[in-house]
Image 1: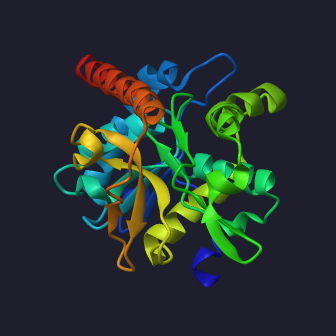
Image 2 (image 1 turned 120 degrees about the vertical axis):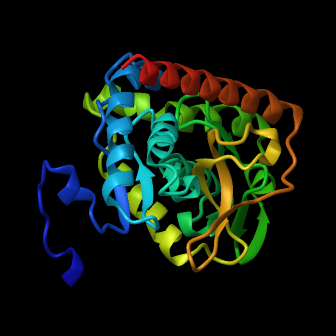
Length: 274
């Protein structure tokens, strides 16, 4: 691709942000063994506060921003706060596509199909070990028939047990094995995320994105929370509404919502103390 044929390394925020259409914000203190994402808040809030201000100063009002650096949801919240009002909050998202892709892969393996035969899993909440990985609305194309994933799997205990915990804990397992966080899989997820944001989602299919809540599912407005979203060809995302939660889902989603509210409050305090 001609437009991607050069890479410029810069340290000047004005040069970095002027005239951009998309920003991939990956520069954050990396998570290390034994750390939860909220442990990174104090250091990373300063980074994303500064980048939010730089976006406001130099970027276009139409710039779309993907936050990858952890804790991604809360970093996106802070970045959007300091980029306002020039750049609208709906132009900010945090990456839960890596978790989404991992969930698709787990279901595909369990159902003995290709990953392209699985759709509509949901990552609810935070990009952390509290996220709720939901396959209750997922579909699997098995032998030419589109079926509920729960029917194809046929094991509710697995869906609420190993499937859920494997995706939730995958990041920590990779750090344990590699002594580093995810690399290529995270890069692929970021590409998937922005490709769909640019081109739109396929018909009858949604993806998981952490976006500022519009109040759907009684999630507090403005909280950057992962939802199932569809995206129009002009890049506007919309939360998929009307999905039902059973008592198990409600319990899990309450945990991740509470964690995000706590992270948000801690981050705001850190901003005020600077």
